[in-house]
Image (cartoon, rainbow, N blue to C red; front, top):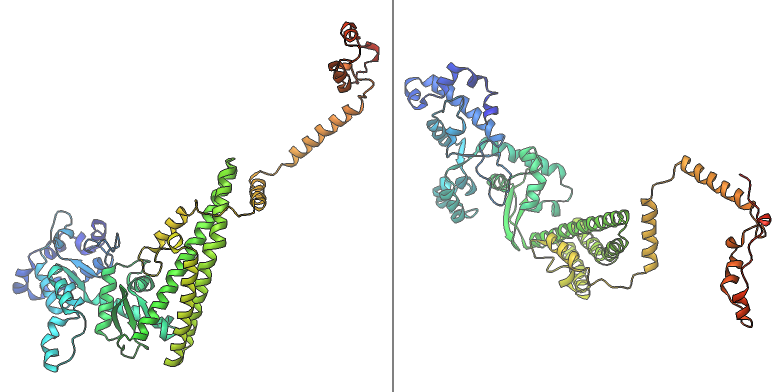
Length: 468
C-alpha cells in the first residue's frame, strides 16, 4: 500500500496532502467547492486501490489467498491510507458515497437491493426474487464490507461480453456451476486467472438484477443460467435445465479424472526410468506393473465413460425440440446405466467411491490408485515387462564416443595379433588345459606308480615366446 500511495502526485505534495487528509467534515460546510474536489479525489483513489485488491477484506476459507477486487473493508480504512505520518479523516466521504450508491454494503447487494425495493414490490404484488432472509443476514454480518458499485457494474458488462462471444449452443453453454463461473470469467472480472468467490457472487447477483442470469440449487451445487441471448431476459430454471446441468457436470468430472489418471501414468513412467538409472530393477518393474494396470484397466474404462457422456452432450446440443431432448436423455440414461454396471463389475470401492456425488473426487482417485498396488493381478506378461525395462536400461546408458570405440577396436586387434602367435604345441604345460587336467587325474590301474613317477620338467627349448 505504501508503494501504491507513493505513486500518487497529490499525496507526495505536503501542502496538498495536508488538505486532503484534513477533517473533510468541516470542509463540507466551510468550503463546499474544496470538499467536492476532495471527494472526487478520494472516490477515484478508493476505486483504484480497490481494483488492485489493496482494500480487500480478509479472504474466506473458500477463497484461500484470493483477494477481492470489488470490495472495500471499511474497518481501519483510514489506517490503510496512512502516508508519511499522516492519517486521513474520510468517514464523511465514505458515508456520502454510500448515500450516492457508489458504495453498497455486500449484504444489500447480495439481497438484490431488496431492502430498497421492498415496499414497491409489495405494492405491485410481484414475487420476490432471491433469498431475502439469507441476504439480510449477510447485511447484518457484513455491514463493514462495501462493494464498489461502479466496479461491479463494469465487471458484469465484461462478463456478458465474454460469455456471449463464446456461446455455441444455448442449451448447454448457458448452464454452469458457480465454480465453472469463476474459472470461465476470472479474466473478465479481475484480469488474472483467479477470482474470489465473493466477487463471483457479487457479479452473479448484479446480473440477476439485470435479469440476464438466474441461479438455483441442485444436487448440492449452485446452478447459474444465462439468458438465451444477451438482449433477452433469462427464464426460470426448469427440470430439463437441471438434467442438462447434471450431464454437463458429469462430463466435467470424468474429464478431470481422465486427466489425473494420465498424469499418474506419466509419473509412474518417470519413476520407472529413475529407478533404472539408480539400478533398482525390482522397483522399476513395480512402477511398470502399476502403470500397465492404470492404462489397461482404470483409464480405459474412464475414457470410454467420457466418450459416452460426450456423446450425450452432443445429442443435447443437437436437440431441436423437447422430444429430441428427451431422447437424448434416454440415451444418456442408458450410457450411465452401462457405466454403473462396469463400475460394479470392477469393485467401485477399490476404484472410485461414489464418483458422481462426492466433492473430493480427485483425492479419492489418487487414494484408490495408491491402495490398489497390492490388488493388482500378476497376469502381466513378464517377458514384455522385462523387454520394456531393458529398453529403459538401454536408453539410460550414455552412447560411446568415437574415441572410445576406436580404443576398443585397437585393443581387440592387439589381442587377436598376440593370440595368433601362440599355439597349443608351443604352450607350456602349465598353460595347457589338457595337461593340467591330466595332472589332476590319477591312473586307475597303476596308481602307486603314478604317484612315484616324478613330473617331467618342460623342455625350455620347446617353449615358444612370442616376439614383442
